[in-house]
Image 1 (tube, rainbow, N blue to C red):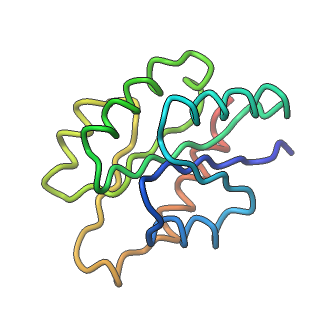
Image 2: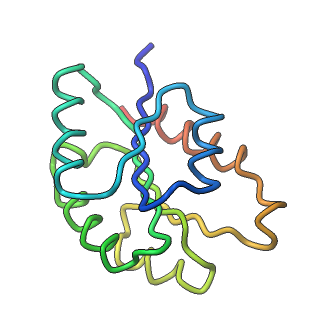
Length: 132
């Protein structure tokens, strides 16, 4: 079975990172910049990573996150990877979805302590498994 590599891009450590590290065995957490995007592409090429899961947390830096997502979604080598946008509020979710229709946007609804991260992460893993 092919290994699952998760690339988590965020501007700061947060609850999402903790949950992702607890759920997935191979996680590469990075600050979302053009240079780190190039590192991801190089790692995938050198290590023969055919499929990966990409999660971008936009919290705290929505404008910079948008520029990064533009780079990411225009890159042909990463087009096959399931893409998730997290760290958005419910009222922002539709705007992010409209701007990046390829991505799945996950907004925490209700109280953060009651949010079912495990269910969402299991769905992410399933999406990765479905990629051919």
